[in-house]
Amino acid sequence: MAMGFLCLAVFLFLGLDLDTGYAATTPTSEGVEITYGTVLKLMHERTKFRLHSHDVPYGSGSGQQSVTGFPNVDDANSYWIVRPQLETSARQGDSIPSGTIVRFQHMRTRKWLHSHLHASPISGNQEISCFGGEHESDTGDHWRVMIEGSGKTWKQDQRVRLQHVDTGAYLHSHDKKYQRIAGGQQEVCGVRDKRADNVWLAAEGVYLPVTETK
Image (cartoon, rainbow, N blue to C red; front, side):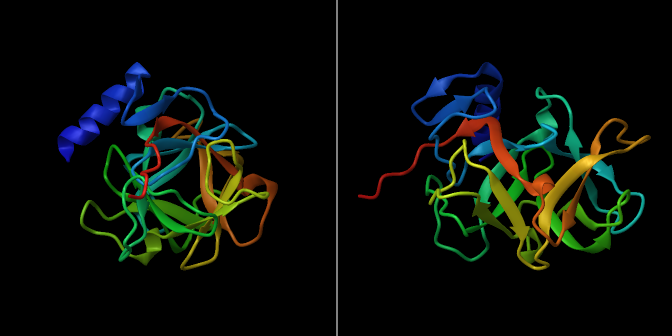
């Protein structure tokens, strides 16, 4: 498994087109399916910042690993692996219909995109963190993919909202930025209502093709 992720990392930085995946270097590529096992960046539609995490804990709230919006495209800490929800028969290469529950594993630290009822540091909305590890995950890591518009399965050119299953909050960001530890990075938080600032797009990454059913 470790070697597989090493190869994916090499493919990401070399930008190669392979039989095992499509390397995307532009923010959107029309019609490219997002499947389980894909490694991607999530771009906040309005600000163009990428969903980011690194091994720095929050100084308040849960004290778990922080999640922010990062301004630069070429950052290795902004890659996430799309995984199935817990206790499912979904497999690598399966497509993801609208309404499906997924998990996002941070590629560098192996922790899961997570939320819970703690206040976010800047706005006081719901905190978004990274938590757990390779063999430690719970329903706080579950996110429902909600496609905006008429699309039936998640594709790279589609606008989506990501709703936290346990709390109902939408993954959200805005212009408010950190001044010190994560200076220049913007807050990522959860809010309960649909807003223009909780729309995301799949951006750069390695997109695994849909596995054909035999």
